[in-house]
Image 1: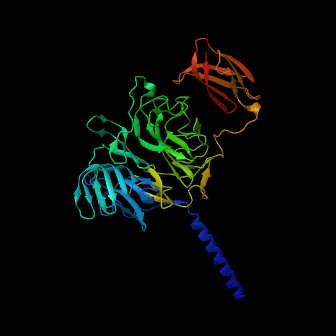
Image 2 (image 1 turned 30 degrees about the vertical axis):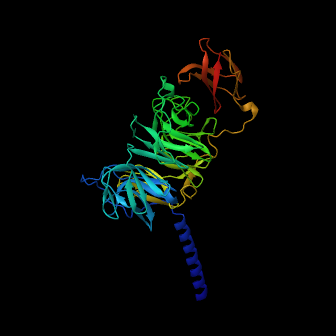
Length: 488
C-alpha cells in the first residue's frame, strides 16, 4: 500500500513538473531587460525625465553580422551613448560617448569599418578619454574611433551595394553647389560624388524630393518621395539616368509614405495613404509592388504604418495601434504572404511602442517612458518577448488569403469592354448582382461620373464632355474592379 502511494505520488509529481515546464515554455509575455542602461533616464540639463530623450531603434544583421541598437540613451555610468550590442545578458555600447545634443540616424558596415551617421557633438573615445572633432559621420574600427572631415549635413540613412555607399543627408556642400535633401555616393577612390541630378521641372506631377530613406535594389536607387504628388509620389527609382515612379504613385494631401521593405523579391511600401482619400492610391496604409502594379496586402490596415522590417521569412509591420485585415492585433503583426499573425498587447498604458526589432533571435520593444504597462504589468525602456509572438498559444491571425486575388468562375467576374471606348462602356456583372456602383475619376482623383446599376449586364453611356484617360471603379457583391479606361 505504501509502495503504491509512493508510485502514485511520483507519477503525480512527474505530471506536475511536465505541466509546469509546458507552462513555462508557453509563456507569452514581455519581460523588462535594460541591464547596462540607466533606469532613471534624465538629461544633464533637466531635473525631470525628458520625453523621447530615450530613443532606440534596432538593426538586425548589422555590421559584421551582429544585431545592434542605435539612437541615444544613457548607460549605467550616465554616459550618453549612440550604438550598442547585447553581450552576456546586458547592453554594451561602442567605444565612444557624446554629449546630450547628439543623435544617431543609421549605422552600416563599409569595408572593415562601422559607419555611424547622424549628428555627434562632444565625442570622446573610451580608450584614452581624448576628445575628437564633432561630425555627422563617425568611423569605428575595434576600439579606434575617428570622425570624417567631409561635410554632409545631418545623416539619416545609409545603404550599400558593392563598393558604393549611399548616404541620405540634410545637405551636401562642395565648391559648386549646396543642395538640401539628396543622396551621396563615393567612388572606388572613396571620393564623395553626387550620383544624380535632382530634376526641377515646371509641372508638379514630376517634382522630386527625397525623404530620409534610401535603398539599393536591383541596381537602382529607391527613395521615399513625399514632396511630390502624382507618379513620383510615394516612392521614386533612379536607374542611373533618370527618375521613375511606381504605378500611379501616392496621392492626396494627407497621404504619405513612411517606410519601404523588400520581401520575397517584391517591394512593399507603408504609410498613411488610403483609397478613401484617392482611388488612385495603392491600398490601405500598405501595398505590394509585383514588378508591374500595386497590390493590396492582407485586407489592408486600419491606421498608418510606422515601420516595416523582415526577419525569418516574415514581414513585420509596426503600426499605430491598428487592426491587420480582419484581426484586431494592435501595434505589431507579421505577414507570411497569406495572412497577418501576432500576439495582442492588451491595455498598454503610458506610452505606445516606439520601435520593434530582433536582437539575438529575440523580439524586443522600446518605450520612451518607464510608466508604461502591458496587461497591468510595468515594463522598462527595453523589453523582450518571452514566447513565440507569431505562432504561440496566445497569437491570433487574420483570415487566410484576405485581400488576395482569388480564382473565380468566369461568370462571377466583373468585366468592362471595349477599352479604349467611344463613350459607351459594356459592364459585365455577376448574375446575383442586385446593386452595383460605377464611378469614374480623373487621374487627379476627382469624381466626374457616378451611376447605380442593377442588371447582370449593363451598358453605360458616358457624358460627351468626357474625353481622355480616367480611372473606372466598379463595386459589386464584394468585388471591386479598378481599371484605367481611355475615352476617345
